Picture (cartoon, rainbow, N blue to C red):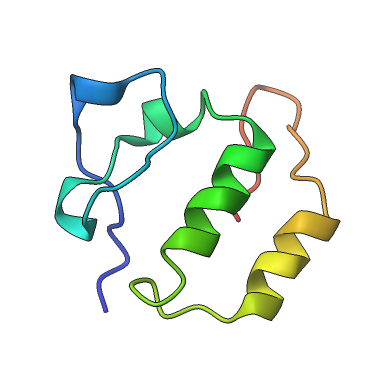
Length: 76
């Protein structure tokens, strides 16, 4: 499985991904605009495609991703 989940797609820059295939995922810049719930919803909808377990989503749901000094973010 590829670790490159995102390709650039300007068509929905400000909206969470709804019904897209893995081939048409949004850019990292777009996803950074999402609320935490949008990320969780996306993962839940793509659980089979991304080959992740419900427990993995729970970990993200139960832990906040903190921004570090200098504007870099921890990776999920």
